[in-house]
Length: 139
Image 1 (cartoon, one colour):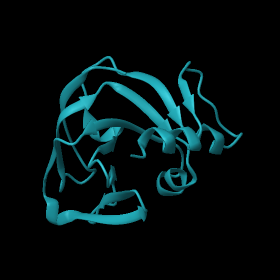
Image 2 (cartoon, helix red, strand yellow; image 1 turned 30 degrees about the vertical axis):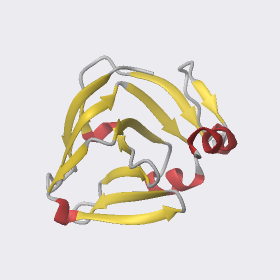
Image 3 (cartoon, rainbow, N blue to C red; image 1 turned 90 degrees about the vertical axis):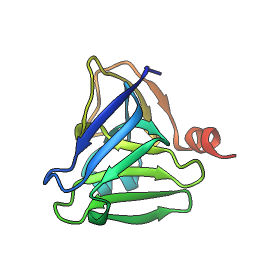
């Protein structure tokens, strides 16, 4: 995986600002059914760890999407803000929201077993099935 850097960003309307002290420079794609339903395609995101804060938190709406995670969006503009693992408190943030130092590396894909046939990426990446993801993150 990439190095950890400080990153800031905001939602589309600017009502929510994000501050991540340790955003990873590795970009991943999640192909799970929930991410594709949430975003309309694969979720392209970076792991921002636990040290994440927000300005404009009153504009954030959270939704418990599974037993192990919640998703959040800006209730003013609808921007997807994060996917948060409830056990570890780890934030996964859509890469497009963040002002990240370059270069970024797209180097992993998860829930590859749920990826539909109608798209593919040319990048060579580490590919994990849903079962492999659950095995890695469960205590």
